[in-house]
Length: 160
Image (cartoon, rainbow, N blue to C red; front, top):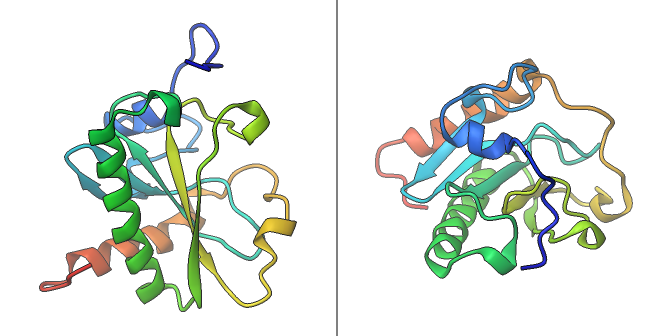
């Protein structure tokens, strides 16, 4: 219901979840920081000026938006959002986190696969007043954030 995905849409998030790198380097498996059985988290290629390295959490199955999302997938995404938020708070030297989720064009949804943004927040960062940076962050720019988060999750005994 309330779907806007164009005919023939090749979902970049489905491709990434399946382990296939984007040929243009926009979404790479090297960006993935954590998975659970139904959801995947990765460093986002789109950045905001003062909130770089934010993470997207997607359902592994293709659901266009919140309206289509089954409860089980929603719970898996939410659980992973929480884990990522805790990891960002521990590793980015930020003062907090914000999450955002968009539905339909009027809601500013631009990728037709359910996803939640997890942003590091800093005093005066003006996240909600700033447009995103043009283009995409390079794989080299994203890699330090992915490594930092994976290292956090890899630590023995970490309870998020």
